[in-house]
Image 1: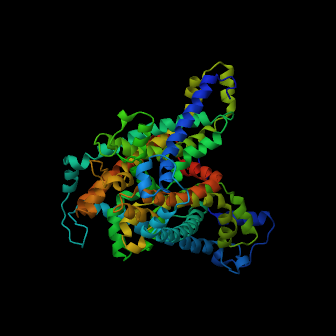
Image 2 (image 1 turned 120 degrees about the vertical axis):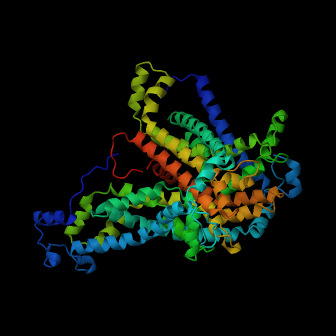
Amino acid sequence: MHSGAVRRPAIIGRVSDANIAAGVPIAQNTSGGRPGGTGGATGLNLSYKTQKTVLLVGFLLVPLLLLTTFSLYPAAFLFYLSLTDWEGIGWEMGFVGLDNYREIFTRPDIFGVFRNNAYYFVGGIIQIAIALYLAVILNNRLLKGRYVFRMLIFLPYVLHSVATVIMFRNFYHTEYGALNLLLEAVGLDALKRAWLGDPVLVDFSLAFISMWKYTGLNMVIFLGALQSIPNDLYEAATIDGANGWQKFRFITLPGIYGVVELMLILTLTGALEVFDIPYIMMLGANDTETFVLKTVQMAFQYRKAGLASAMAVVLLCIVILVIWLQRRLLYRGEKREWTV
Amino acid sequence: MDRLEPAWSKTLKYAILLLASFIVLFPIYSVLVGAFKTREEYYASGLALPESFLNFDNFARVYEVGRLGLGFRNILIILAVVITGNILLGTMVAYALGRFEFALRRPILNLYLFAQIVPLVTTQVATFSVVRELGLFNSIFAPMLLYTGADVLQIVIYLQFIKNIPKDLDESAMIEGASLFRIYRSIIFPLLAPATVTLVILKTISVYNDFYIPLLYMPGKDLKVVSTAIYAFVGPNAAQLNVISAGIVLIFLPTVALFLALQRYIFAGVVSGAVK
């Protein structure tokens, strides 16, 4: 967790010490007043100090330019646009202050679509629970076929996501869809439904696609975490007479707590950003619009780019808040140089 | 672990695993058999196996009409450029930020940290105007640059990894007179290979799957990638479920083949990618 290693003030200083210690003669070209190594192998005779400058500029310029152009500047520009009535074409715009934000929070058809995002979040929580349960079952060396099960359950994650949604469109088809055909085949005709037509069911049907796709991924991540828990703990607990649930509660759960928390956050931010599934499945019809889908429609269909920018800012703030809260919780008191 | 586990408990576990496998496989089974059926057969035969697994008409049809060939070609070009760019820029940034102390180091790290939190989907309203001003709208360069420059996954992975490469290696190379670039090329870059494998896997999956960016930036007919091609095909052809099934199977194939071939790396890759 701690990257903590105290950084040396300058690599150059270290190297010259090392040179002396190793009895290596200090290089003759002392340009810049410092003993520098030679770039012998490439024929360059630059001091390490000059080399460092050249390398830092050369290695960082392009990536930073790209980052600024396509990520940082748009994020900043978004804040500005959110205060205007820009239509998305041309550059004419009037400053409207916080009007867009007022509109978002007062129009139920905008802020209210978060209700649809909630289905994906609840689905995600169920998915985490199922994934954890499956991982615990599979984390048993005596279980036959565990590698086959792991592979099968993970499979949906590697399947193309648009094709997967379209597959489920066929699957849910009221008349010819495999789901209703299966129910009929096993004599459960009474359970047949219009999975995408029914306004109550449709949100569950869509959220299920996400669960279907990501349960295996969560399971594999849990398995990785479970395997890092030392086996002796379980053996000691068995000797002490602990039952399965007690072992799970007092050994497994504390051991993977961080991963569970991380997964919850990923599920929450993922649920806030759902776009593909409702868009591909029904273009947001039947009241299935998610917040991002609504934002895209505002910007590119209704030509209300200013309002859409404000919506994007709202979402951005929520996501950043969630991640910030999680980091506060997860790394209590711990300071990491590069938190991810 | 539980050598004395009762039989009912074992049976229950297998039953649950079998049920989970069934839920995963059943939708896939339904498109797989549907893909080989003729139109009449599809609507009449339900869940039964197709009359012949040699009926490739649907595949030919969707490949032609759905322009999947074009989609595969475009996404391969994008993937090749994006992955090369990510590996080069990612290792360069990681070397610069991970190995040197300089005044702007902290601020630059913070910029990457911030960019990593910003969800790409939300900023597209503004990014869109930037892309258009640069004249990149409706060109294959838009997704290439966005996947390379705006997504910072590679920086995160490489920075984590470079910490585990001992600095002594750099130092002994310096004693031998190697230039800093030489150290990057001959020591750091090769030793970052495991992180590169993870990166290639995660990027391939995410770029191949992405729908949002090609949908926004490449509406042109000749700029379809796999995801936008199948989406465009399904729209007007919604009735022909058998042909659509064939398209889905075709699109599933490449990643399933990769998965079966590289299972070990993929499992390791997603675990380290998620828990980074």
